[in-house]
Structures are given as structure tokens and as C-alpha cells.
Image (tube, rainbow, N blue to C red):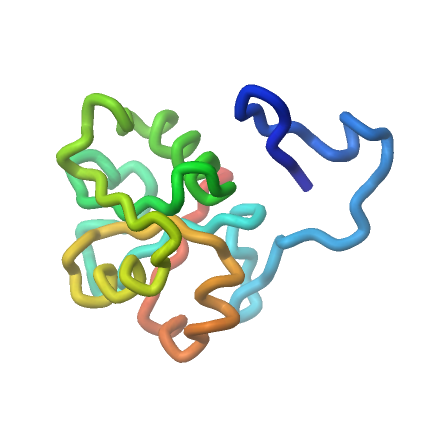
Length: 139
């Protein structure tokens, strides 16, 4: 597991404190690994514009609360795939802590991609899971 340390850095619990976390936020969805620790990146399954992370450029992306783990994980993935939060602002939509609106906008195709906490959808909206594609960010 990871935590936020000073200056907004993400640090590994095991390395920082020399102990191992017994339970993590990593989940499995429909028998498959979600692909991210604590954060999921998802799109509407019927949205054929988004099939992998390499399809992010020039797509509308919903982001979480700026100080959340979902935001930081999402930012790292976006940076790695050529989307800059400062220069590509026209494709970003910030939802703060309103994950429900983000999910609804993905389902209505108002945005192409949502980045949120994995537990949000799994616990509060399990009925929507069959309609979503979860993108593997570890490849």
C-alpha cells in the first residue's frame, strides 16, 4: 500500500516503515484483476473510442478531488500517456468528490474516461459494472 507523505509524494508503506500491510485495496472484478491499487480508470464498454490507455489523447477525462489518491494515480497515468494536466485542460473535467456525477457522465457519454476510487463503483454501483470497461494501467 501507499500513502501521501510530505510535499505530496506517494510513498510505499513497507519501505518507509519496514512493515508489510496485510490488507490492501486491490480488488478483483468479475474474476479479473482491476489493474490498479485503489484507483480505477474506466470507460463505457460500448464506447469504442476507448479500448486502451493509449486512446486517452484528445478524449474527455473525468478526474477526482485534487488531493485524493485517485487524482494522483490518474495524474501519473495521464502524464505517462501524453496528457498534461496543465496544457491539455480542455479535455479534463474535475468532479471534486462527486464520483456519482462522474459515473453518470461516463454512462451518458458526456466524458470518455473516468478515474476514481475502486471501492466507489464496486460498493455503491455494482449494477453498473457490466456496462463498464476497466482499463489496465500496469501494462
